[in-house]
Image 1 (cartoon, rainbow, N blue to C red):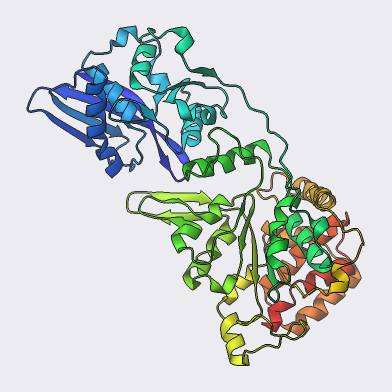
Image 2: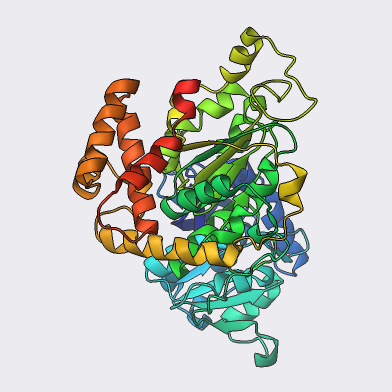
Length: 517
């Protein structure tokens, strides 16, 4: 006796459709699952057995073999419980295939079973639903708690249930219509991103150069490092960056929600994430927690910040190996994790914002009254050496955040608001969007050397300044490209086609710490 149903597994952040074949044959009673199942799937045998019995059906005393195909892909997660149970009932003729209202080849089953047969929610439903749609599956049967999340995908019908008995009755068209949790999908509207009025740059007194640097950084998605004494406002400024980030597009919002779903980070099941992520991990975080990994690889903080900002406060306090692991994701925009049976890829197109003190005590070279630095030059160098050259080289904009005196703090001058900054940033991003249409990139920070030469055209005086600065400072080719990328973003903010002297001079100023350190 044989039956075949379909389930789904997660690989990276993507769903993969899995054929679940069930064979019942004579012989000593045995229950075996083959096809590279992980431990959670192997444990499903006892959950499925108990759920079938406690629902009032007979668990067949046969030799049961379940094959998960394709066999070369490692299968993970507890979402195979429901399809395996349905498959066993089909193979043992306790559910008549002739009476089923759907084509099993166009129906996907997902759900974890409790011992009493109730269906529990699982992570990654959004990815599985996307995979189902892309594989021409028309009907999706999921836990009731996951229905709203699955509804984010159009062109597929979603049916949510809380118990396996409901699923069986529904398949046989015996469930009362009023009890059916049937949801025909339609694309949800992308609500306007909520502005956090508590974190507005209008509240930040002084720090005009820092706010300008943030405007440039966000406009071109340039990584940013702020260096300043304790209490200068680095963390306070960083938390306000989310208030100037442009809204997510529909596809970006779906992608961000997909990542958080796989990681089990969705706060509200079924609610689309329409604000750009802002992640601020503690400096004690492990490498796996920061970039992703684990026995069953999961997205790390840098992937959870995809399309948004990851803020690393007290940068030198992070583990050195954790910081070094950021280099490739920042460069490639994705995290690659290799395992014996599979390779996992998590997206990580983020803007890195970091903050640190200039030395261990925090006051080296600062203007804070009555706070003299207690560190020797050797200690200062040792502290700064915790940030490697290659990592520092990937941070385009490096700026000092000075101490602000009381006169500035008490000024009644109106400061530029987050909304005003956001509008200027949106204009610059729209220029980049048109420039890089069909070029495979979105922002100036992503340009390669060929694109830098093509799009970073300088006026004559700016060309002279660039040559003089390059020869005087002995810069590398990579540093030159980064200065030109920043200059291009500044010119875009001014809606200028050519990079002018003022644009280049400002960009050079943002790389000043490179030679100081």
